[in-house]
Image 1 (cartoon, rainbow, N blue to C red):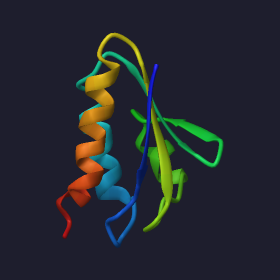
Image 2 (cartoon, rainbow, N blue to C red):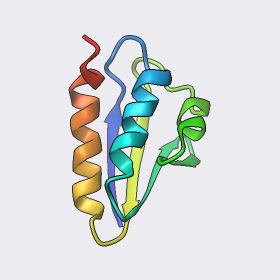
Image 3 (cartoon, helix red, strand yellow):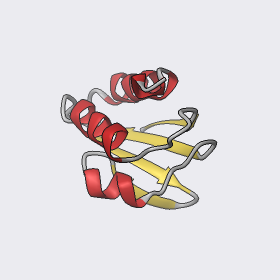
Image 4 (cartoon, rainbow, N blue to C red):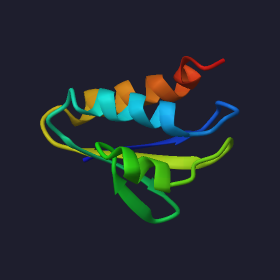
Length: 88
């Protein structure tokens, strides 16, 4: 299992567009991928799950992956967060 903590740094937070980008990227991996906020864990391959997190600017999230490509999956998602989902 691979876990990393990220902070939402794009001003608009994780709304529909970033959620769709996250889901699109997670589908490329075989691992089970989760996003956790304050103990509430959702499947990162579910757009509705991501939106229900209500992750606004400054929110800390934990990325968790389990499976054969878990490290690559977490690193790919970290790059999305660091790029602010190319919104700014």
